[in-house]
Amino acid sequence: MGLCNTASLVRRIAVTVTAVSVAFSLSGCAALGFVGRSQAKDLAEVNVASPELAEGKPLPREYSCRGDQGSPPLRWSSQPLSEAKSIAIVVDSHTSSIPAVHWVLFNIPATTTELGPNASAEPPEGTGQAKVTSGKVGYEPPCEPGASYRFTVYTLNGKVDPAKSAELSEVLKEIADMTIARGRLTVVTTG
Image 1: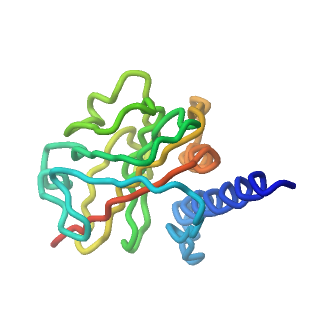
Image 2: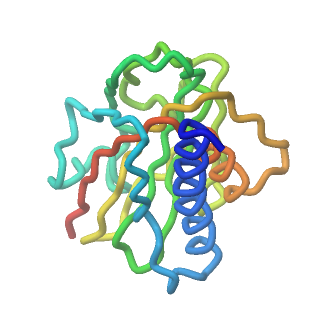
Image 3: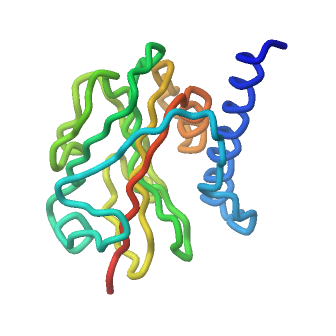
C-alpha cells in the first residue's frame, strides 16, 4: 500500500470515528466520550469566521432559541484543494449534558466561501439539509445555557447523496467518509 493510500486510509478512519462517535452520542451512548476528538493530522485546515460570532465568546442572543434570526452568517477559507467537490456545515453541541446536532447543510458548491444570515431558511440552490437531533430539518437554534456549540465546515471530495429516509447518523457518516478538510468556530451560550 503506497504512502498516499495509507494517508488517505488513516484520514478516512479518523474522520469516520468522529462521525460514528457523534452518532453514538446522539443515540444515548455519550459515555464513549469520543465526540470531536479526531486527531486526523493530514486533513487540510479550513479557517472559519463570522461577522457575528467570535471563537470562545457567547452566541449572540438573536441566533439562539431566544432570538429570531435563524442561522448566523459564516465565512471560510482554506488552501485550494483540487479534489474539493462540495462543502458541508454541521452545528453540534460540544459540552452540553445532552449532545445534539443542531444543523446539517450539505452539497454547498465547493466554490462558495460564505453564507449570509438565516441561510437555513434560504439555503443555496442544490443543497440539502438533514433532519437534526430534534427531528426538525434546518437550523435548530442552540438553547442550553453554559454549553459550547461548534460550527464546523467540512470540505468534501464528493457530494452527499442520502436516501430520503436516511437517519442523521447516516448523513454524518457520508460527510465523514468524504472529508478532506475541516475547521470550526466554537461559541458558548449564556444563561
